[in-house]
Amino acid sequence: MAGTLYLVPTPIGNLGDISRRMAETLEQADFIAAEDTRVTVKLLNHLGIRRPMLTYHRHNTDSGGQAVIDRLLAGESCALVTDAGTPAISDPGEELVARCAELGVPVCAIPGPCALVTALAVSGQPTGRFTFEGFLAMNKKNRRAHLDALRGEERTMVFYEAPHKLAATLEDLSATFGPDRPLTLCRELTKLHEEVRRTTLGQAAAYFRENDPKGEFVLVVRGAEPVREEEASLEDGLVLVDKLRGEGLSLRDAVRQAARELGLSRNQLYDLAVGK
Ligand code: SAM
Image 1: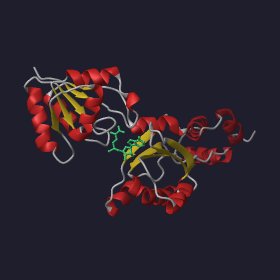
Image 2: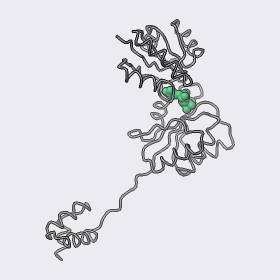
Image 3: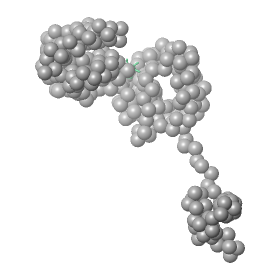
Image 4: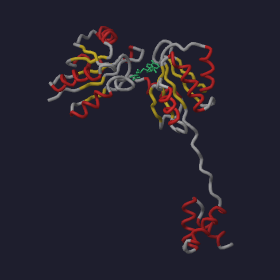
């Protein structure tokens, strides 16, 4: 029987966010697949855990992934970790989980730190419907296409960004959605210098034209205001009633259909149609 792949989130800054289940899973796994073993060994030392490790990162998903799969199929259990946060969320792991799903290898996700969820929760923006957009592409054409596809998006949008690209990204977001669009800029979440700035795209772009960004950022951008459909008037209803009568409907049926289609009162439309 195949072993289980455990997805183990690690702190995005604050070591106090290590959970008991996270530590136990690392301790009990037959081996750990890490994005960077030098980063993970520090966490393991902090926890006093020693386990065999191999590397699984975005540049070896084929060879590293196959090595993990072979051992899982041989019955070993694996704890997958990245440098920080939840594996498979803008981090290595997505392909490995998909491959396990194809092969029927069990996958168990341990809940834990994730910059996306932490930023969204603290943002003050609507959280009922949101879309995670990850990093914008560096390539100009792909970046433009990504942003164009988001024009008119009504859900809250969450972006990741590296500090050296933040200023350019804010300029592009401001040009796409307008400078007045509300933005929550979340910096260094869970760390000593955590900062949550509720501002606008235009103000943030202007600020970072003059100031160098430091630390890690999540951008939570308010969605577009919903487009309100114009409310139909009784006169619009009369026009539709005439049209439907021209198509052969009785007055009563034409009024019923027009009122339903345009969201009007059937009685008021009928009274108007018969000239009351
Ligand atoms: N898998 C990780 C997760 O669950 O959040 C995300 C990894 S992604 C490669 C790294 C990006 O996450 C950073 O560029 C930044 O946008 C965001 N990030 C990670 N830690 C953060 C923190 N403490 N504060 C703000 N953003 C953070």
